[in-house]
Image 1 (cartoon, rainbow, N blue to C red):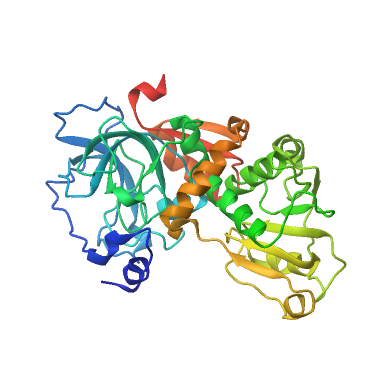
Image 2 (cartoon, one colour):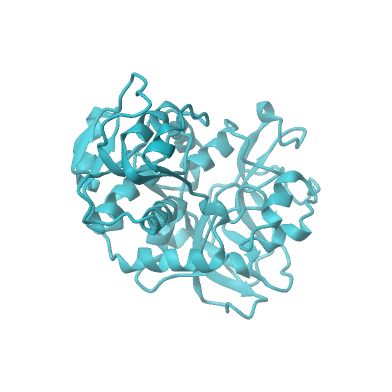
Length: 381
């Protein structure tokens, strides 16, 4: 068991990694065939179609030869406690784009199916928690990183990773929200645990506001009654950001902040990291908090201790993929109860053949909002 698997084994959400062993599949199991048509699920199916990331060496550090192709796979058998889901929808997150393009060290086994989000219908179950026909969703928990993910017609996972679809959400909405929406809602949950309230005088800052988490952060904050400011350098998107919920849109500072600046924000949700995070921390009000969950700019952080020891600012780490199941269920119920117009952030509906190009556009900073990936024939109509 490697160091990443050992860390996941400590997390209640992910018991699977306590017995994690990856077996390479023979070439006969993964025929080098590219298929472009989706099929309806059939109880007698012996194979299914998925996006498979592999390299010539199947070394997880061999990014140079990484390839992703839609291929046919043999249907796996279920073990006790597992659920097999007919995936109707997935979505693309920045993490997925890093994995699929090989720009980030996301995939921890090869060959592997990427995709950290999935929503669909239980096709088979060896779990007392779920039965065939149940509508469900899965986000994070290691899918698309350590174990086959959601960019496939079928997904087989432990039942402890599966969340019943809230009644107020459709399968398409659940996938559109996906990890991005869950992360935004989890970040706000943690901020409110640290005394953030809608009645606060100063606005809440959202960075990376045109991205998936940023767009949904704006929508959720507005739905909860917060005043918001969006930082973005994409001036052409300013009107869109206001439609998503920003009360004000401004360009982030380019020069380094002093150790402490005049307080401008009650709190912040940061998806960017790097100099953006460094520059916003000195702008947070006394005893305010920053929820940190991304590195779109950089994984580095340069700051001083002054905001923390003189103002009592809190830097909160948000890890949606390792969130314990009880809290995960609570956050999804919180999301569903908002009854928001989630489709307002949808900027693309994708068929399978468009996934690879879209991921490259995400890396190049040419996408905004959220996309929905259709995995079944009936979802493409």
